[in-house]
Image (cartoon, rainbow over all chains, first blue to last red; front, side, top):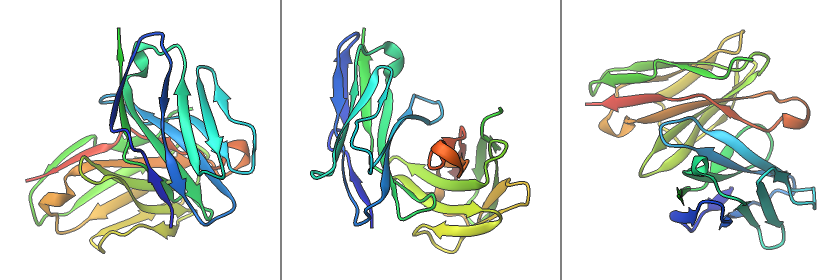
Amino acid sequence: AQTVTQSQPEMSVQEAETVTLSCTYDTSESNYYLFWYKQPPSRQMILVIRQEAYKQQNATENRFSVNFQKAAKSFSLKISDSQLGDTAMYFCASLSGGYQKVTFGTGTKLQVIP
Amino acid sequence: KAGVTQTPRYLIKTRGQQVTLSCSPISGHRSVSWYQQTPGQGLQFLFEYFSETQRNKGNFPGRFSGRQFSNSRSEMNVSTLELGDSALYLCASSPELGESSYEQYFGPGTRLTVT
């Protein structure tokens, strides 16, 4: 069974600053994928970034990057130059064992302060 | 391409009734997954369909069922509604091909309120 843990229910960051959201996961599979999804208030969930477990290089998408520590089963998201539009719930998720059964963490509510 | 669409967006039902929710995936996507999102339980996986076959099922009672049609559109049904079924029901589709094969694209959700 997969588990995903996000230990920070809420966080805040000043506009233009950098913030890191934490996530740990557990899986017995050797091949798996990790994701960060963003759910803005009253808007739909969108994929922010993904990481394949077999890739050692950390994924980067513009201002978003991850720190993937495979041995520690840690997958944190760093948001640089935070913008007001980054205010949202952020969900860490994992997929393993094939198919599309994704396990989500409980989410971190991020507030960007002007 | 048009995104994932879900209908209806909002629904109010009474305990004991049944409800059917619909999801149209992105054109070309053959995998459709359903999730229940509540403040207390977070996002929970309901089931996933691929080419009209259910491939995965979460830990929900048999009152929750679904199906997928040949055009990849999917429906989920909840019978004998309970107050605890009030939630945002999210549908997500996936291409299952190429680099993005395991990325899921979500619809806006259907907000179900059971009274």
